[in-house]
Length: 323
Image (cartoon, rainbow, N blue to C red; front, side, top):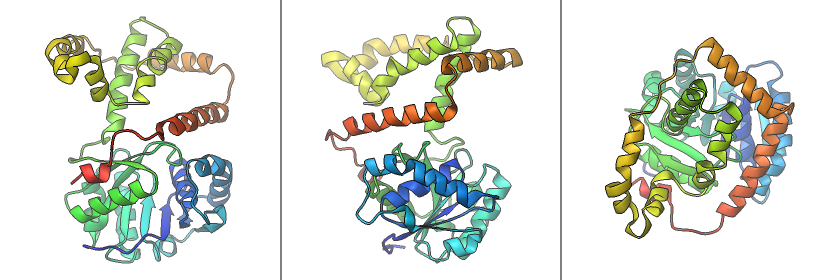
């Protein structure tokens, strides 16, 4: 697998929210897309999603000739992947289902150089690829929701994934406007969700202890560090926080204070009462706006932020850094 054919045809296996968003992104980037899902009404739901999301995806960079009309749908999974150069799987998060499905996808996808990626958020590829005849071409390509807007993709192979597959997947995702990162080791939940989980654990602890309510906890993140995290990651921000001495000064003089806070972080028990308190707080914060209305507001702000972040900055080529 030293050289792979160019990707022209992408197959989407599973067309729930993540799969439909992926389909929108691939279509906007000028690919022919064949999608498959056994669920009733799946095709209508998929096409409705693509139509609704098309303007946002096109704003971020539609290629010449890109069109929702290049989407095909079939309930026959084997037919969907038969001509695919790249497969993006998005089935439910059940290990036994993923293992069987990946073996079937691998059997039906043209060998040996078509990459098969899973959007799995928690199951490792070493588990998923267990029954594949060509496990060397399988990997995790985990997006952040919604994939047609959020650039991040976490790329990590299993124990039987070939290094060339990881290299080529990183290059492919980068070429279609994503921001791929290479995870050097497998671990449940990958990286970004674990970071989210760590943050939210402390948020729940603070709510439980009565330090602040749900709305204020959201404001503490989104109007404070969240604004900075939308520009730079925490380690680079600490470099700025160290002043003229940069990250070395931060590590020598400020990091001990941060470590002191680590020892005070909570591990709350999510009791029924605490769940209810959070649910009530979120609904009050939503103030009668539907999930769709809030999602539209989120996406509009994300598009504005991404437009600002498109301004050239220091080189950040993930594919090169993965070597």
